[in-house]
Every structure is written in structure tokens, then in C-alpha cells.
Length: 188
Length: 188
DNA sequence: GTTCCCATGTAACTGGTTACATGATTCT
DNA sequence: AGAATCATGTAACCAGTTACATGGGAAC
Image 1 (cartoon, rainbow over the protein chains, first blue to last red):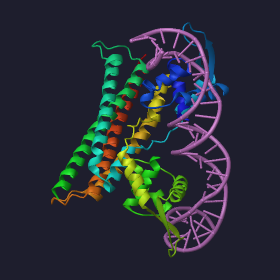
Image 2: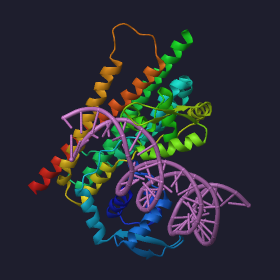
Image 3: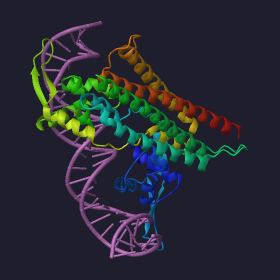
Image 4: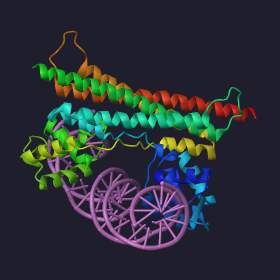
């Protein structure tokens, strides 16, 4: 049910169409929750049916009309209820880790390029996050008034940054392990 | 399809029954891929039908009979094929992050106990991983011969440890942010 | 006698992915 | 002329979760 809640949060931050939501799920909110447009349209329809959202047809010039969704009162209540409920600390699913353990039954050295590819992808994501932090949260020397929404967005982004940094360091560990194993097997 | 591959890896490491696999998915392999017994039984049946696995009925004393699965030749080939295919660097799904951003539209201070609960769970997991590392990979002073499987299991475990440490540090960051916001709002 | 562990499953449902489909407009 | 962007959707399928079900043996 977390997609519903992610949509509620995103629409509270800014009302928008299914298409716009799909774009946000490619950045911003998508850094910690993903969804495709097909899924979003389906859920939006259901949520509207449940009275959690309101729709407004918006005519546009030079572009197709769109349906702008916004959070209705019961939607806000549903989000609030969810926020007060505990969620389970989630377990990770890391396909690459499965591969690494599986490599023991194949050629570990063959994994090197795959791991390097992942490292590159995570480096790119880190750069992207850091650029976003620079852009949106660059600290002006003067203390600004505390802005709750901004602070919370920032702490979530810092989480993404920490995750990418940790992952990159771990992938380096994996790479040196793979190189070491290759050297050892070549020497035998 | 990653569950299939995780099962192949686990059964290559050690053949076993559906029940035993379910237990392994609560520890060891379960640290980076989860599955319930229902799902496992379903997938085992399919994989057996596809010729990836072999079954052997094992009578036991004082316990119900079990079906011991092991990897057949086509199963090993399927794993090898998968290992040579690229997988997409995965995006995280972090429900707590959705909550944190959502808290801007509710009472952020109400999240404190939830975040503390998560911190506790991650600390416990970290302790558990460290104990496992101590037990299985405690470095004897003498250099042992390189053991590929062991090394790969260890590097994956180090990944789990790094993940938990990073998460705990981030949750501390979240907590201090929430406390700061509460203090600021109390002062206004 | 009640609870926990071993062991296997079915059924219904929910959530997520992939493929297909349409059509206007803007940019190169 | 062709590709990219805006905008919305359907259908089929696959993966994962939750609930229900059974039954023997061991431990307390």
C-alpha cells in the first residue's frame, strides 16, 4: 500500500496529473519509491473511486488535456493514519549479492565487469544527488527560518547520498575481493 | 526471477528441503533476499517441473518425511547463464523515507518513536551480522588457503554490515533533525 | 494438555512488470 | 520525415503476501 501513500505525499507537495507523477517517480520521490505510469494510472483511478483524491480536467494549449489530481480531505486523513501506524523495518533485496554468492559456482572473475557497471551507475546517482543537494539545499551562511518540509526533504536526500556512498565503497571491496581471487587462482 | 536463482545458489551450497530453504531465507541468504515458505514451495515445484532441480524423498525418524531438492545439470546451466547476463542496478524502496517526507503534512515529532524503533531493529541486525562474522570468518593469524566460496560469502556479509551501519547513522541524522524541528516549533 | 518444531501444501488476493495502443505537438 | 515529449490508458502476466489447512512428534 505504500504506493498510495507515496502518491498522497507527492500530491500534497504539489498537485499534478498521472503523467507528472510518473515523471516525479523517476526523480525526487522515485529515489526511494519507484512506479511506472501504468501502475500510477491504475492506482489513481482507484484512489479517486475511494474518495481520497479529487480530479480536475485541465485544458492546455498545444498539449493534450490533463487530469489534475489533488488530495481530498479523506486522503489526508488516510495519510495521517498511516503515519501513526508502525511499518516494518524492511529487508533489502539485493540481486547483485545473490550473484556474488552464486559466482562461487561459476567464474568469479566474470563478475568483475558487471560489478564495475554497477559501481558506475551508483557513482552517477551519487553525483546526481549531490548536484540536487547543491541546487536545493546549498547552505547560505545566514541561518534561515526552519522550514519543516525542506528539512525533511533534505534529510531523506542525505539518506540517499549515504546509501550511494556506502554502496560504492562496498562495490570497491567486492572488486578487490574478486581481483584477489583471480590472482590466487591464476597462481595455482 | 531472482528467487529462482537464489534457490539455485542456496541448493548448490547445500541441498535441502523446502522447509530448510525457508529457514535459510530467514538468515544467511535471507539477509539479501527474502521469501516465505508458501512462495518457496510453489517455486520449487515449478523448478522441478522445468527440470532444474532433482528431488529425493528422505524418510526421517521422529520427524515427517522430507523432499530433498538438489540442483540438476540444467539448473546449474541456468544459473551460469544468469550470472553472465547483466542485472539492473536496483532502486531502493524505502517506506520510512516516504513517511519522513509525509510527516511534513502531519506532526513530525510523532515519527520519533517510529524512527527509534527502526534504529533498534537495525542495531539488532548489525549485532547479529557481527556475531556471524566473528563465528564464521574470524581471522586466524595464519593465512589460510584462499577459499572462493568463503571469501564471497564474507564480502556479501560485509555488505550487510556496511548497510546496517550506514542506516543506523542515517537514522541518527533523522532523529536529530526531528528533535531540532520539534524544538523550533515549540519555540515559536 | 498446550505449545513449539518439523514438514507440506492450497487459495485468494494484491502489487508490480511488460507489452500493446493511440494521438497530438514540438523539435531537429 | 522522424524522433521526442505530453498525455492517457488496457490487458496479460508474474511475483509476493496473507489466510487457511493438516498432522505427527517433542518438550514443558
